[in-house]
Image (tube, rainbow, N blue to C red):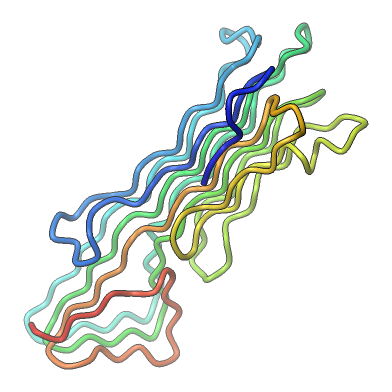
Length: 219
């Protein structure tokens, strides 16, 4: 997701983007989210917000069959909230959420009754009179990772400087930016990739898969 563009204060940054292709010919984790700007924070005591880590990469291969009844979660990490230096007016922006990673399951017969997830992390909120809140990590469900709240003040900045939600289908959510684009939240991380490869259609009844899987039946 997108952070706010350059403005009079500290602009937000983007969330991590998806990597690789739908068939996971190159198995790779997700991209990390962008680091927040420190504004005028004393970075020795109030460091800039770190972007969420990208989700990992998991490959499970078996000769005859695989059954997944538990949870495999390669979600991206949430971005940190913007720094607040009490000695300064111009605070830091929130960091971007990390993108979801990759999950590859391949066998002659594939049965999924549990959860496969590779969702993006939420973007951190920008600081105002208080530090911004951290974005949530990518969840093992179809629910988007939570947006980091903006730092508190008297003009509703908790909402207007919040981060973007993590992605569950495509890119992450954009941050909500104040009118002057100052000290804004980071964008949410994009989704990763899930690939199921089997001989004949994989059985996924009763499962939770987010984002939707790409499937091949030519193994």
